[in-house]
Length: 303
Image (cartoon, rainbow, N blue to C red; front, side):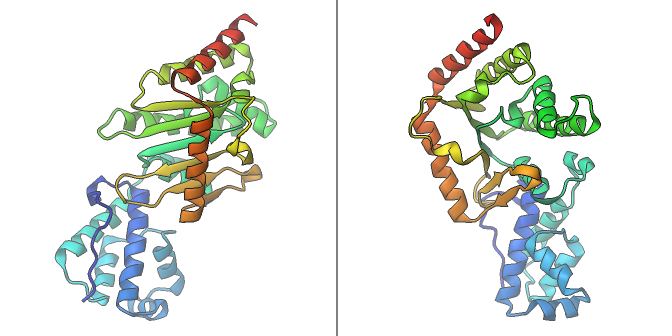
């Protein structure tokens, strides 16, 4: 008789909807394989299209708890603990979150959902201050430049609103039990680029210094301009890790014209994890990083 055991080490009730959906998808796919049933066979039995089952097993769509019970019965799984656990995960995966209002699509939609549940957020930025760390005036200025639009245009405001909501969700989690940790490495050129004007940039750097006061939540590094061993010149990225083994690490690479990539294969995440460690090893961290930020901030105000 096929069985399903949770290898995550994290209670089902502690998982967010995105990781819960991925967990349901992975385990249902494994149970179908254990039962030696094809997608087409199961789809016929459930009176579903092959596309529906395929999308469920890929985590592209959610599944109702009653449908989970029916599938498990078809796979010969009658352990009530397993049935209840997967049903709870399915229910969790269908819960609406704050980002639902934005109707996001593609890789970016999955990234926002995963970021909202990550226990460690590692971000490297070579062009601008990471979105989770931006003040609103800076966010408006950098978004307007990116879109080549007026800062008051609706598309600019929509993106800024999303960024501010991402921040609010992060800070609410930071204040809760087992809050996430943010580790950000920023290129020195980003700190010196007065996007929005020198006053806005000085306030943005003030914000970074204020966040850095809580070293349990925020860690900052800076790659100086004269750094010879610079592993990060290939581009910015964000690497997400999750509590226990509830989900594999997720890598988000933001591309031009919306060509974003979201990867969770081990080769990609391990490579970028090593790259990120290089940036920490060869850049400035701790007090040295904060001293550099203060110096640049002071220069913005006196220059």
